[in-house]
Image 1: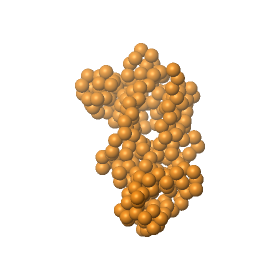
Image 2: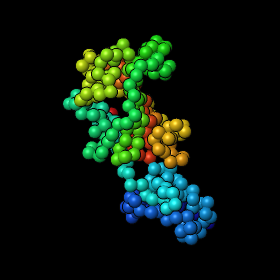
Image 3: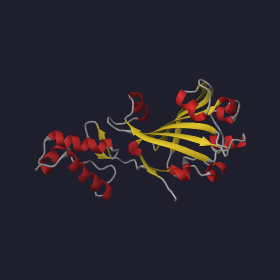
Image 4: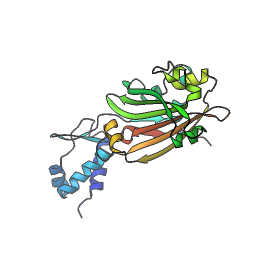
Length: 245
């Protein structure tokens, strides 16, 4: 029985993970897979598409399909949100990427009425004003995450939070200075397919899913002081959580 696209993709994936197909290496093309596995051209194409959709490979027009050179970001939620990190003036992003080159682009800071879901999470009345911080994070030249933070305008208005440069330690350090130090975080995570606009913003290959995270920051008294909606390129991340019983 001829192999399926999934079986061919599984074999190639194992070769990628074992290192026998190194980052930047050209994968066998459709004709080679047809000859090697005795399958139809469409099956070979689907096998390569599966690897592209998983973020393990990229297509280069007129050249072929290559093992993706970008190494996944290991997002350790417990580590990145530790108080000692932002309290020492470090970005929580440094926990994810270490010394890898990172930049923030498209930053917009403005006020608007809170979306209904955000107002509910922040415990605000419907339509209450929030300060919005909308930005795109790029690592090694690749956009990997779009993030939009919402904070009650009555709390953040007039502070460094409402400025483009929030200063060392970012939003959470400024909240602490204002007397609203976040000590607990709740994250809701789901995977979905992106909209066309989201795909274009993150430069996603066709068929690539995203991971959507809603994070709510709360004070010791349980007051919600920030909601951060994050949209991650699913192929660019490994999600790691440390849980103790």
